[in-house]
Image 1 (cartoon, protein in one colour):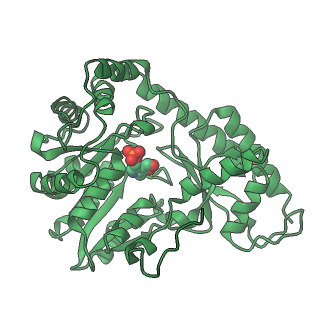
Image 2: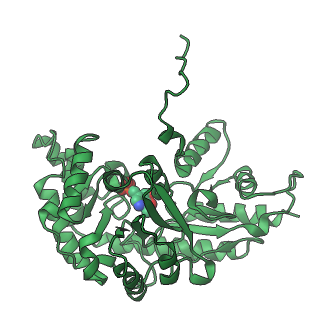
Length: 406
Ligand SMILES: Cc1ncc(COP(=O)(O)O)c(C=O)c1O
């Protein structure tokens, strides 16, 4: 049958402003090439390779057999909200009341609800770059203006108080802060958060979206801090976002959550009630177990990611033309590849731009994502959420590919 003919103007202009997530697109390309028989190591996607722990799976099974298979409250089951309330108190020193907490289908939907509830045409959202790409596309979908502020290597790829101050305008609605950061892995210290808070306190119209989703994946004993706890005067205008995906290897269960002012949460509930209604009842039961159950494996997994980071940094140090940002958390390595540009491949192609370098690495058997998607070029991001043997092989391929450039 013939496909439908889409009339001009059928799609809403706002959809034309956004792109499909580059890491999802990269993962699909890897699947296609593998289907053609190509040997590609895929390091595009931000997903722990570890299993969801057995106690969490059992809690989900038990919930199914208790017939917890129906709609839940829009903002989450009372049990999950209680577990989140306890988690915020225990781990972050944050006191959220039940009406200041809500659950969504992943941290992504929580952020989507917040931006859709507050941002409209002309509103600005300050995003330190390099950034997680959805921070840009969600405000664009809301017809707002993402303001990407490049964090310089000499500042450790972190936004400084002066740079934040200069980016704030009367139209600024949100400042998004992601620590540990995807893609650089940088972690803000308490002192740095305090210094940024001092700027924010001078601008009471600016709200803070703190994305703490990589909170438990920190290395070298670096302590994690959340901005609403570091500066309690910001508590009333901070949305603290978190989720179970990264800490508990539960990306497919789709549970994210947040704490914030009750009026904002109430509006976000309204948005969610008209999109997905609620998160999956079974996944919510699993998340209760994740938050309330044993936590001993969490630091062990962080340690495993740290070992992978160390191995990757060690191997890539010997790759000519590459410079790695040293991650202090999360599970990515962000690599500056300007040294590859202007060189010729053994096939005779000159690498002129970041995408040429990414394509060449794909030809060499490793899939990574170009830095442009994260707001900084010429770089690429490689996920280190794969077994160490696979990462070692990927680094050998990258090294060989870089060494073959002339
Ligand atoms: C910085 C950051 N925030 C939020 C998310 C969303 O996570 P989820 O929607 O799976 O909970 C991700 C996922 O990659 C992320 O990297």
